Length: 149
Image 1 (cartoon, rainbow, N blue to C red):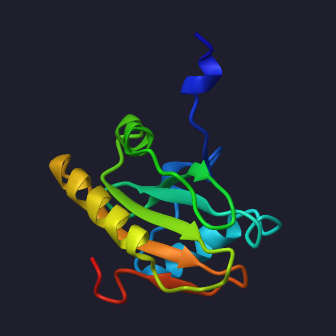
Image 2 (image 1 turned 90 degrees about the vertical axis):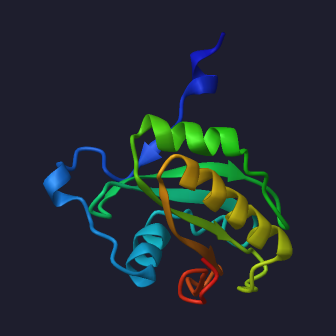
């Protein structure tokens, strides 16, 4: 079996001691760190789904890209998502994906996926704190800020 298949890349915290991890206290903090770590050249071309892994103090343990798709969507495999969360021993998470069209309103599929992840996360005592949708210009929509979580 190819070991690369089972490899999950978590970025952001490489070489940073835990006492220096960034703390997320609101959607603006999350949006800033996510947007800094997004490939801007593909935001208008390809939808990507990422998550921020958090410790019990809401400090960022890492950022992980779960999937990359096409112009109108990407497939999120919950088994891969939760394998990453559990392997990293994270207790909180923030979801994020971009809409290449620039439209910030969540689709019906976005809402259903968020609810599905929220329910599954609660079984493991993992808090889903937010789901952000980004436009290529950096503007974002927050499920938490809009009362959808």
